[in-house]
Amino acid sequence: MMSQTCRQQVLLGRCPAIPCAPALTVRRWASHHVCRVASATPSTTQTSNNGSHAPAPGVVLAPEAPPPPPPGVLAPLAAYNNIVNLGVAKAAMPAWKTLIMGVMAGCYISFGGFLAITIAGMCAGLGVTNPVLTRLAMGALFPFGLLITLVCGAELYTGNTALVTAAVLEKKADVKDLAKNWIWSYVGNLIGSLLMVALVAASGLLAASPVPANMAVAKTAIPFGQAVVRGVLCNWLVCSAVWMASAATSLPGKMLAAYLPVMAFIALGLEHSVANICVCL
Image (cartoon, rainbow, N blue to C red; front, side):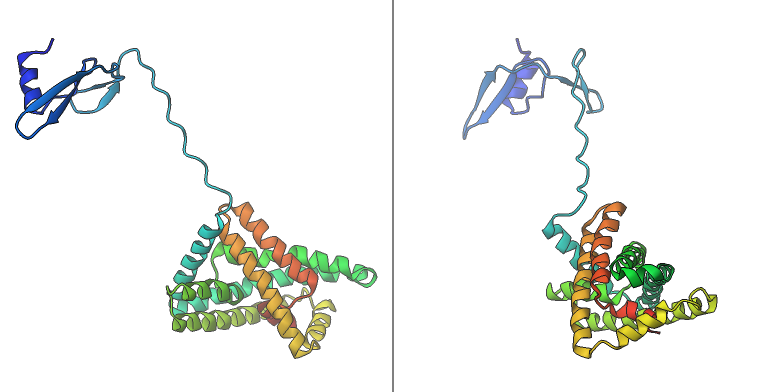
């Protein structure tokens, strides 16, 4: 039975929630109230004095399911949006910062070339009998430079050609910002590569190795048209590596994404403009 106070609250449309009691549904009409009592199951929570809800005595609530883990790689659309956002950030970067981070990228890529050339010099006999294995060994080691660049966030010109272009195509950056990023990142890559060449020469580690000179002679003898086509094919793979590494959500995923395309362009004999600065000088 309901008390007189509860009946008055029902008629006024202010029926409070009463655990373990019949639910009261109030319908308002133009001139009067019609109350209907409907059966309801007992509530599994009780309202405390401070308004919080606590489990009723004897009721065991199921634990909440943990959130699903993040995917190892972003979906294609999400990966593209991430690329655009990265391009927007790079386009908005001041010129001096792009230059400094470009110097870092030039050093990192040259570190990868330094490692690959050093190992190739140690496998000189293998290169004579089976040059494919030497090229595969260099391809297995050179991606080290791109991985450092991607994880540390340096500005690599060849990768920026994809990222900033995507931002411009989506009208989130303008051509002036694209030109600023491309110019200063390439100048920084050039300075960083020259700096690494000077340090390697001062170290004397490759002074007795014929590999750097042989590679420089072979690369500078390539006809201009062939060099351009090899550069386009190379940067296709490099941009794919940057794209996939940006879509990966873990460090092992970024390593795998950067490793395979870069190893492929080294094994195929393609030409990377920034890496060639270190090799040819």
